[in-house]
Length: 357
Image (cartoon, rainbow, N blue to C red; front, side, top):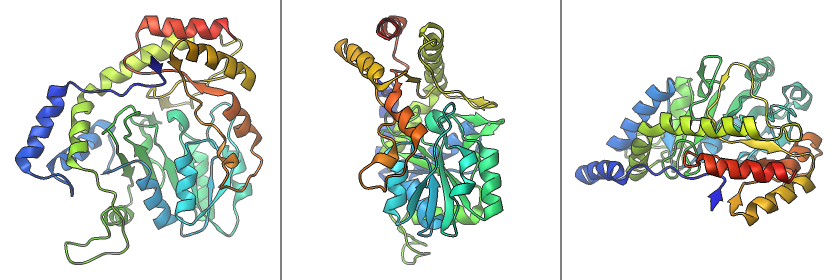
């Protein structure tokens, strides 16, 4: 069976060595030694100024929206994982969708200003499949209109834009460390913020609002990661360069062998160092996609329809026409991509796709 991705399991003895430290410390949660060490190593690896790791990738979005959204309208993209829009609604804000660019698949920055109203408080944009948004235009618009910028950078571990980590942009950026991601802690995430005062608010917000054991800065929830999760991260991190290199080989094979006279894939934004996190292909029609998907499934190959449906079509959201997002959502398929795929696997996938277009 070949799935859309495969979780990287570090050598078990390396994970056990980290767990041995947990047992020696007799400390399981509340920001123990392994969590603090992982944060420092991630700061160095990613070349970022600040990071707070959390128990999943959705909590940082919710905290950012609680602090910056202030119950207002949030301009966002309909083409993302459901957590992006669900977090907006969960924090009693209102999603206002802007359609996507047909090539980059990120929010169409040329449509943002028309969606701004007196109720708008923030822009929440997704760097789709690790492909950065048009950051310069988004942040210029936000500055002109007094809006905050939150980036859902769940797919962006290791991505840089214009020579610096994509996590360095916006008022807040977030990432997922879920088991399906490039770098993972089993379940986890992170938040990045270069405003010291705001980062302080984010920090106490993820720890019940605590100011020491007996006092409180303000309202908070539990977003802390455990030492067991940090142990996994410390065991995975040394293998990241090898993981990325292996995934690059798969992507290069797809790019060289798939029939791109019929298929399309996303266009990477200029000045991006990408991380090979996903490989989406766009078919000419949904019928063509479903035909190819069935052939792959019949051969125990399971790509995935990221992201379907377009989020403006989710039942608990007011439906607003988003023609490009809807069209892409109906015709896009993410092909298997992992460190574990060999040339025989990828050859089989490519041949089955090309033969059934």
